[in-house]
Image (tube, rainbow, N blue to C red; front, side, top):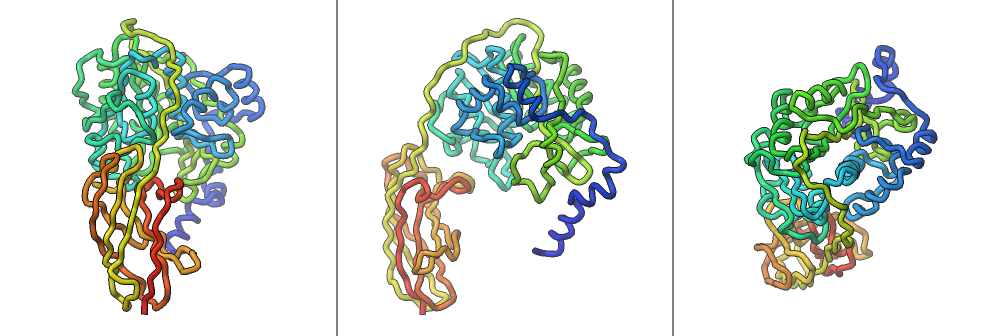
Amino acid sequence: MDLKYQIQRVIFSNRVYRWFLQPFDRLLYPVVDDDALKQRRAAGILPLNKVAQMADLSHPPWKEVLEDMAPICAMDEASFHRKIWEYVHIVYALRSGGHLHAGARGLASGAGREGLLYYLATKVGSVVGIDLYEGKYLGGEDERDIPLHPQKYAPFKYPEDHLELTRMDSRNLDYADDSFDFAFSASSIEHFGTTGDIERAVAEMFRVLKPGGACVITTELRLNRLGARIPNTRIFHLRELLDLFVRTGFLPISPTVEVELEGRAIGEWVVLPHGVYRRPHVVLRFFNTVFTSIALLLRKPGDAVTRGRWPQTSPPAALLYRGAIEVELDKRRFRRREHARCRLRIKNTSNFAWFTDGYSHRIAVGVQLLSREGRVLEQNHADLAIPRDLPVGDELTFEGDVPLPRKRGRYTLLFDLKRELVCWFESQGNPAVRVDIEVG
């Protein structure tokens, strides 16, 4: 563990917060008993405008939406994550108002490649997602080729003619007034820039909605007096958010917003940046800023939208990670610092097209370095890029070089297909190829 990392852990620790910051701080909203809140949810009380709460799992209609979204959103109380909560609550809120039906057209602002887009494409007539798609994020959320090949990033099979992803600035939408039945933005507006930039983006969503259309926005809510913004992220005060939406013309569906905080979530908040993968993931603290997710359901005045029944569709078909792979090496015994020349023959026997450009979600051949006993020495020893996209049923042969370990010994090279940043095909039941070599 390097010195810089150790210093960061100390500075952002709960101990430093309690000693130096907490005496001057206070929470802005009440902390409630977890069990009492669960009982209210089980009894059928769940506001549409609210903060993230684990107790929502106890509300049967909300839990029903979560279960229907299982292909992209699976969680229980132990694995609760506020981002999954946002996706489920967006659907729950829109469904409650009759806005999700086979004839509806929706807009997602700052859409990235969220699984929610693909899910809604199975429920409504059409979904349009817009983003800048500049390729700035390491996780691939805004890869440049997303608008060209949205199916490359799909979590399951979906009706491709129901989803359109487009490179566009949220502050200047290239759509006519009154074009959409509903709109949403999932944890995006806090990254849009200045207050003016954010207001322009919200005003644009208002403009392109039909009168009577609904808009759900989830974002970051500041929970403590000392809270401020964190790097590249605006942390909103509730009054600031509500004033912003009123200025742009929206009407809140409900005059009240539930901002009660669960005792467990406060007592076990996630300390950023080091605890980012901790679950439950509900309330977070970044140095002096405590925050969580909030969802607000808004309405454009008027009554020009058609309401409809929630479609009872079958679960989307899962992606089948299947592919034939054959490997030939020019030899099996090598000197140190050599490369192994490989000839590979692959065939796409899955149910989805393989895209090979970019990084996130591309299909490639990965090479793992194993001991002869099968112990993984290097999981990402080498990558062999596939020279072109491969439609279902297509096959090709190509060559590549694999570097070899510098130490003498007997090794195994494991050749496996992988969907980058998603999974190895062998983990999904598709056999990999193992080749024994010797380095002398």
